[in-house]
Length: 192
Image (cartoon, rainbow, N blue to C red; front, side):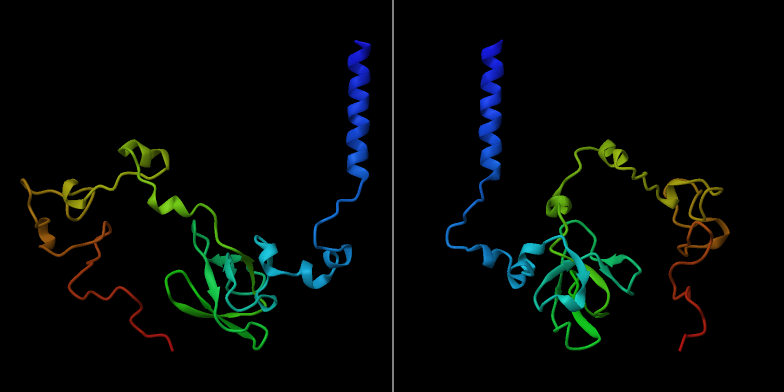
């Protein structure tokens, strides 16, 4: 028992001495490691959140704010990233290419996170069975024609009928609004 205790004490003192000795990097001096330019390298700051004005052209970013202090709204899906196209420090707005290919001007005081969102394989993952989508919290989608007239405007009829009672053959929402035939759904007066 005493021999084990002595062996533990020796190994712990060796380990403590190892931690106290400064580590020398080949080719780099101590002044290079403490240089502020070396520490401000963007590539070493993946996952850092900062204003867009502090970033460079070509930086891949995600979780972008639309208005300063509002919190990230854009580019948050798995495996996505946006790219800075215009020098952020030159003007008040910065041009950013979103994953959809659309280019958007965003205030340079808005914050974003450097790098891409993790889990890029999310879109390629296949569900193994119908129950897998239920485990993810997705409920089944039932067609209106398969329902009864009390449940949906398309419901009812004998067999595979396209007409839905007194409404005729016009497609409707579950609340009875027409969805096709040029029916205006937005505000009638255009905003200026």
